[in-house]
Length: 465
Figure 1 (cartoon, rainbow, N blue to C red):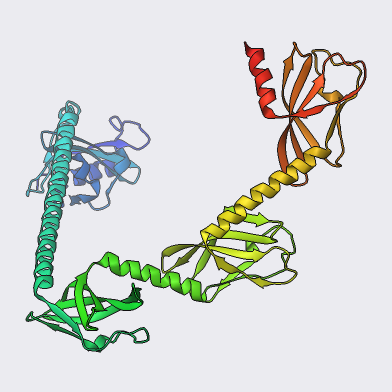
Figure 2: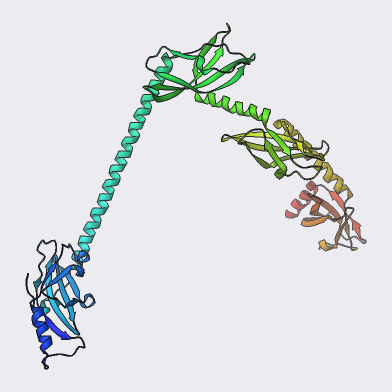
């Protein structure tokens, strides 16, 4: 340890030069004998801590960190350390070497301390180097992980290729047999399946589906798990059917064929078990899906296609299109209800052709209803003359109560001295276009003649020429 001479000053800032202070002199003498050490090591200004400075032989003196300073240059900390005792302050200037096992501080003069230009660039360069190392380390780590992932993918592909090759070889040689007969009433018996022509393989039937071939001949497709040394290696799909000699034969098929039967099986279950109930009277009111509940198949859910509801007033029928979800599979069904029912009713599943027929009938009925309404409408221009400045406010409608009109466009035929007006008419729950013709320069109030859209378009196109 090196003893450092200290420079003392009054806390009040007054110099003690011309005034003897025996206590101050004693403290100064005592503090001159103090030595300083750094507990631990540091690498730069950021890792240096005043808390780790130890003052030896300085009992009663307290380090004032707020009044102390440090500078860093050439891997050395230059410190101005300020201690207090009673109301007096004592300053010392010392240096500590970075990355050094020697914890001792070495004294320097105040002038030497003040002449130090702090090595900010050195710190920045070191920080940049450290950051660069960290970034490179992260890149190397990511590169290693990418390489590991790629290797894992390649290994998995190799394993998959190996399994595919083994499965192909297995299906080439293996032979499954079914010891029972296959008939319309017989259920599939997994225990009656045997495997031959291959060694060291085990199997278990995981699932099966059934359907009928032409001539009402039943067949099964079984999903079979293949194991080797008690570990699963792949699944195979085997079709069991009856040949012309009424002998059960087997052949390997695909997962897609199995799923087709699975889908068909659920479709059949929907036709046989799914029940749609309209839980209140419909009685010619508007169809509301909120009143429809389904039952019969656990876990089934429904969603109506609101653009696919067909209604026939003459047949007193509503047909709605639904999407049914069962086991994550979606099926489309069409359900027919009687629109004049005065109590809750069960719907009937119908096909798309029935829906289309009702939808077409609905169009015809709506067209007929609109034509009937149009035949009753009378458009009257209330003033004597129109002239070329048509005033829509002068037009009133008679024949049907609570009818609303919206002016759209007009077209004038000067040669024939007429004006054709396009209106949108709203009445009851219907909305449709109407084209009406008024004579120009009429001497009396007049009732318009209804014309078709083609005449309006011809006059409008002539105006543009």
